[in-house]
Image 1 (cartoon, rainbow, N blue to C red):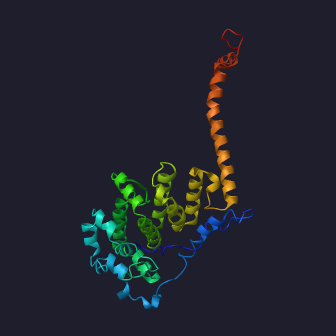
Image 2: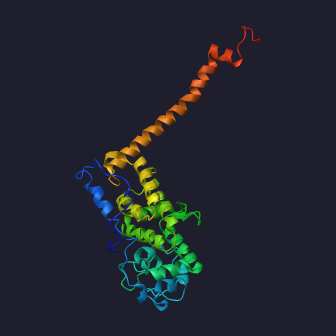
Image 3: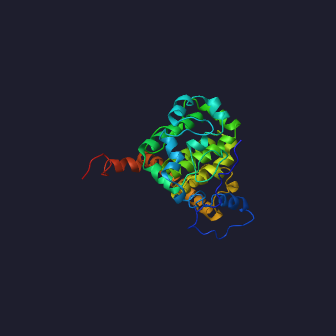
Length: 306
């Protein structure tokens, strides 16, 4: 089972918002969770670019089908062909995920290579490598019972095997670590726009459709804060807060923000009620004697007009 070494220690989602009025005691869990999302996106944890020559870009070479993964000793084209629907092997083997979705930090597979800034740039400039990365993403999504609907936007939906694969996801919690890695790697390698749709999918499945309850903590503590676009994180947190119950147990944003979201929700509900009442009031007005007279433009009572 993989070590949980994919945790960030700081998150900047609400940096521009004041936390005045927060109770440190009541918000201790929220602060701990946000501390986890630190600096992954800004820290250089690996070798320097000077140490990373083109010959040492093993992750890029793997995706160009020029270098096999270790210890599995398989090229990416063969992996995509032979492992695509071999769900038992995808579940059992733990050494491939670091090659499919590399990061700038070490993982449990010491034979995998960490990304460098120079390698990231070269990867982003390679259409061949990026195309294969999307293939890897689709392969893993399918393993989790999810289908990539739109390669441009990253939109996803349930795959036809979702019931079986959701059950596997709930039984084997180490997949939460894999998904965290996948999300982070997508952000590194030029597919940050894929992050939010996947997290939104999990939030909807949990909070609206009432599935995947066993991974809820991972979705909130890790998946959500792996999204590197601050605005997208805010949108996801607003969506989560809207559907989360009970509201007083929501610890993933400051209390002041929660109050704002509650006020916005009340205002929206008032607008909905007002909009729902207006057609009914209009029908009642049209049905009254005064309403009927008004429809005929007034007059002397026999339907004539001046």
